[in-house]
Length: 555
Image (cartoon, rainbow, N blue to C red; front, side, top):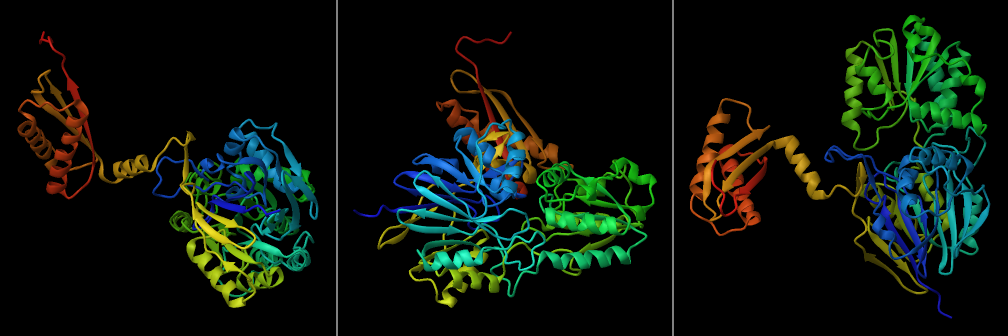
């Protein structure tokens, strides 16, 4: 009996940071590994979130989702997915805690969430799914081993090899090695985020002494530490040091407060560390040396607590010369400008700003080249596909895999929308139309690339609106109405608008047999050409045609 083909469709996460989603299917039945979001870039005005393309699920029966960990770029899209495909979601207890909080924001508290403990195996449709513990910058992260009729697929999720994890939960390297030997790993999908960086990622434990030293050096200052709200181990270390030096914690940010409650409920954080929290509004009247502020917003997000602290001095307390602000995170590619804005603002206010890598206040949660090479040596896959990263990361990981010489069949650098097809003897990559972004702007799919281009154009070049009234015979009635916003801002404006009116009058004075749509398009082209010729700018041109019907007469 022939072995059915295995299809792995990449709906996001290849060539970008975020939107991670891989659909693994056999005989028309599929399982998703993660379904995350990407936060909008600067060239996506008005967009709230960017999702993997849900259209890539139309031709399969989706039987479930397995989440590797609780970061937004891996679980943030689940509310939108489950609204259309209400399937079970599997993951560690910690990951499902983050998922549950995310779903509650969208009224999906009744979703089917099923715990997949370390080492446990679940039957999900035609797949056997095993959870393998991995170490990362969030507790409860797992790699996923999927037994399929076409062979074993291992997806590492995000990981680094931390030999001294704070929670004592070690990465399951021996299990990966065992699977690499028996039954053998047919396809390995592995995290590529730090594939272009040599060496090893430092243990999370390395950050503690550096933070402790910083607290001791700035014993009289008010210290604010910004980190990801999901980085519960980092929060634990900060809160422990604060308690040991006699500081009370201040938690800034709703997501931080929610995640700390979750960590306490799951036994991941000692409740005593946050039992004596200070209300942020009381900080202004306290000795700076008596508090430690933990805040969200280390990536410069405009709506996050750290941005508010920097630019709204009356919200909680005023930052000044008695403050030390610590960015306990790396900058995600694309967020450099937003983070630099915050750094400059805090410096302008007189605060001392501390950042990695100048001081060891952060260590990455992603494996570097030596760790990635070790994983490849243990897994010894037939087919290797680097995932999770920009193209430079994927290419560096592929080069590393080639250099190790352990990949038996093929190293495949894919992109969003690609589909890897694996049979008994064949391996091929096909293109699908499902790599495109799915934008959320209030509702899912309400924004197209064309709309985004128009929004960017509006923000950069302005708009010119041209209105004409034509009679039933197509002749121009009255003077064209021309207005502009954001096109020109000097004494030339009235002169240029008058020239536009004159040009439209000359061009459309004679009767025209064109329909309204065709006439509007000619107006757009005519005005656009004139505007570019005279000002070298490209504002959005909006034509408006009003046609008076037969028998109409002026009153």
